Length: 176
Image (tube, rainbow, N blue to C red; front, side):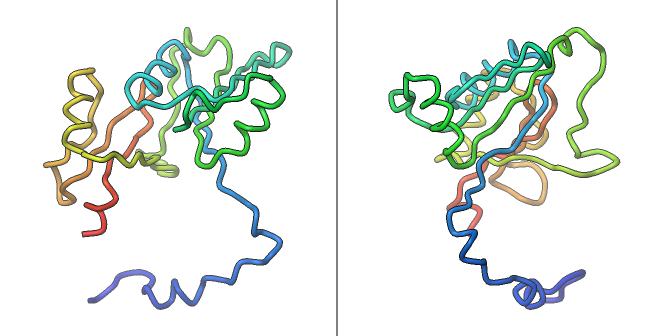
């Protein structure tokens, strides 16, 4: 198979053996700036089924952080210090950063999918892409791509209230 750009062999050769000092490192969070938590929190909890793991408020700097993830809400510690440490030790969380007052201004955040391109999307693995998308349609979620559209079948892209793209996929279908 011909490749344009960088070959798989070259990519493999570029990989370094991880230093033992990094053994306990984890990918912990991706941060999105949001305009209005009154829209984003219901989207990530109600539409995508995430749990609010922790919220932090910084009145002196006029911003709040909301950590979202796929965790059992019954396992969240009640003690605030313990909850903070617990939330910061979860894998693959989403940090929603709300700068107070942005919900009433006319600006939008750049999602990276138009020029200048940069960050693209996050991905959510679901057991059944078609069923998830049918549910999203019932909830009036905005689609960028439905599973049957485009060259890559079986996966979808939706948008959150701030226009960030979210890939919806099933690991078994992607591997085919």
